[in-house]
Image 1: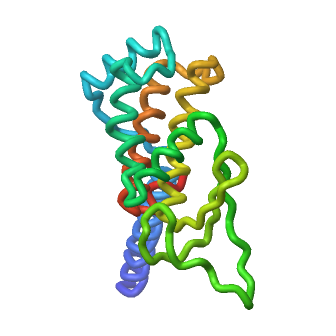
Image 2: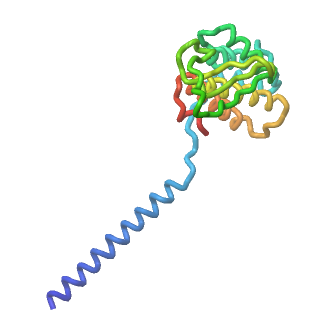
Image 3: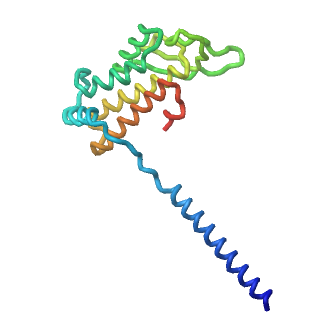
Length: 195
């Protein structure tokens, strides 16, 4: 009789343990499947500049919003040793006259080893073309920086053309994400720029 009671208690404990572990697993899975909302605080000065710009969007570099984007993000991301080429790249991005392609790997030809923008020894798996004719070997760091510049320039252009139909706070958040990716690219933080 005592053995039957012990067995009954064991069954109760096991079923409770199994039930609670299944419950905790369900809770963990639900928590992982619920998309996390992006947390951010609104920086009042930048937000005010953005809201005013959004009311009358333009690409004038002297408006407070565009001036901030150019000074803090675009120009800062193009600070390379080869300053002349950096300026040429900025013009090419604004005029959509730039192409970057991956250099195909071959057994007989090694990758170039000097980045045209950095004037420094780096493996250069990319070739950049300006105005469709001039070509330069560039490193992954240079390419990632330029890529993020394309993204923010085209985003502001798309807003201007009315191609982005998000609410104002959603557009603000997208601009913040693009600015964060520019900073990450500039610092060489590759994981932070991958969407």
